[in-house]
Length: 204
Image (cartoon, rainbow, N blue to C red; front, top):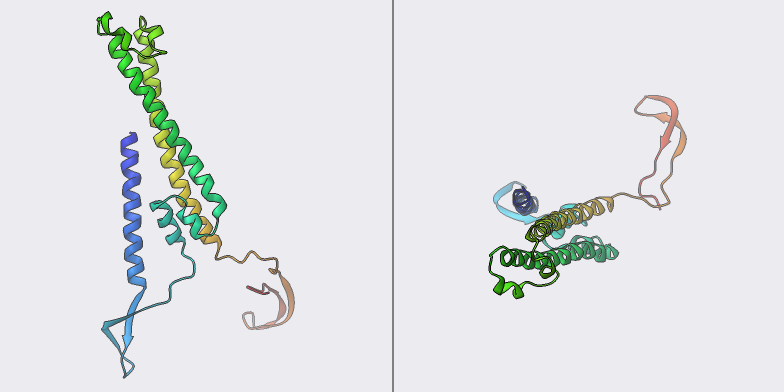
């Protein structure tokens, strides 16, 4: 189940990147008008690139965690991203070491050869006569490894979502100058005198 989830998320990242590259290439090109004012399909020019792209932020974070946050100028989030990913990575390798040690200890404990029991590491040597306890610990550590991988993928995905949402919010005017005014006068829409609610956008 975990391998299928990893493969699915990997495929989604690849498809997202491919869709982004195709959309960017298509949106940056349009026909160039000739001297007579008509367009020639064979000639192309580049349009202006949007000042801030949520898709760019998402793709960058998918490629390299924290890159989208840097693109959004939310530098304080980068340590949080790497703190979450770094913690899960550390726990994964710690559990991997314990898994390898406990697996080897279990093999030595059940091989019915007491001459190699001295190869069993602590703390497994103290319970070498109870191999089922070693096996139970080995299985628990293996499960913890799976959880670490799952949380690593989850944090990576949240890093992408956070970068995309932040980039979207940059296009909204959240300044203190936003206000609503009531204005009396003729309304072209209603074709009569009426009270109107006026919201000035982008006012300074």
